[in-house]
Image 1: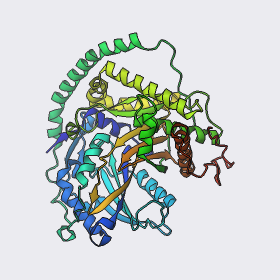
Image 2: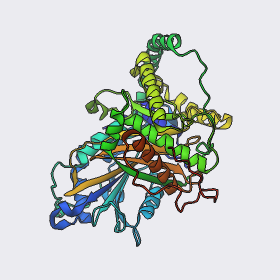
Image 3: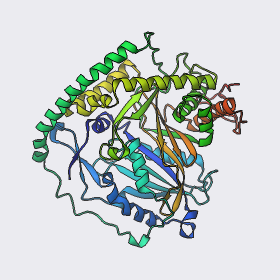
Length: 498
């Protein structure tokens, strides 16, 4: 069965390159003590994947291109599907510590998916014996998908499908390796081309109507917006022009109750506002340490889902817009910064409402495919050459069901997200709340951020500042300055707010 990608799905294919594949990932840490005999074998993991293959179309679907790119690509069933290609087992060498795990995940994130197969991979990672805070004998699963196939909303659906509410063990004896009968049913070029004229006509009509419907909202925004000139976005070491193919990853876990308590102390704030404030403080510390903090505040790009219900998002995976609040990195005081960020995000949401959520997606959804395929890469190139920035870093926030979740009988203990840096935006932050914890992770171009562990300590320092200021809770961390050096080789002069 053929299913065509939308214009927005295809955008992620057309704008990526070998240096910056647009792929999102999730590192999930499991506690095997809840499984029978306190262990989970790799064959049981394979059996669990196999049992769930038919519940998620994207597991078995691969891309097929329309000749000459006259229309958007299609998803079609991979008749040569091989589960053991997509699910692999690796292990960290001793001692199996945190920095080794982050380095391994960074390598897996950097490795581009094979576009001739379904666009996902899962690596089961063992040897995590020396990581504080991880369950005894823990194992991790790092799953990665192309952004054309998944976004935050469909990722939440996938989590629900892949996990059980009870520690149900997988039956390893049920697993039977299989490879499909071959790709004899691959749709022919003439079949695909025959669909193109009608698709193009419908899409062009929707584009014209979308622009017409957008006009009233755009006029309202022009008439009601603040008349003061908008502050330009500064260029920093987080915005290196073209990124390299190398990646670095760092992150920290925080108590969700602390985030909720901080939010409660700032009327109208959200968990996302608290996360933005923590990230802003971490960026401020990091840039200070590298003697490159600009006077102008940095700006965040925050993807937002503008589709319908989660159920609807299964069939329309990418319905995204973006809001661009200031991170107010020019503000030293964390509480003042939180209030300023709250005001910015409220304003951005009001602007989105004025324009209309669905309106924001109509242009990328309905551009003719030949135009989109050439226009998007051109816009990226022009942006790099002119150093025109819309924002400094991307920050995505995803909430996963907070109830206990199990995979092959093992309890889900911790979750981190990874996301693709891109030309001009060399660092992508992911915020994931799950199971009473919030993780903040940065995926960066390694040439731009060779010291992700230090950056993670800056994030931790920022959180402790905000918690101390809002809740009066003593900081329990080690100072980010202790025993560390900046990328420039000097002890980082991290300014701790009083």
